[in-house]
Length: 93
Image 1 (cartoon, rainbow, N blue to C red):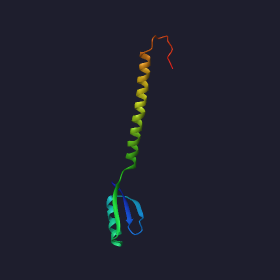
Image 2: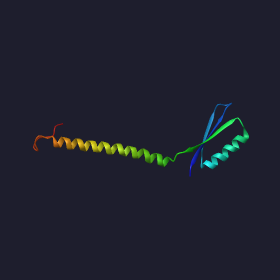
Image 3: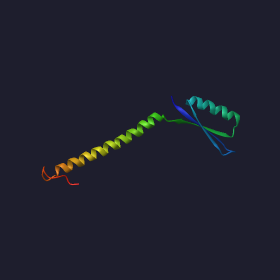
């Protein structure tokens, strides 16, 4: 199901009103009803993205960054270990 935002703008008042609608059909029906009341009012239905999907995408990007940081730390550790002069030498800080 596609959710929608109904944006209503009255030219005389200059204000804007937004409301979330349960579906695009409900939004389009409300738009028609509003236009019948006042022909000067502009209305627009805009699809609204799914918040769960947005959050999953955000955390996916975040976890990707965390994975890259961990990978770089491991590569740095391996590099330091490989370049150590002797096994008894302490690690340089």
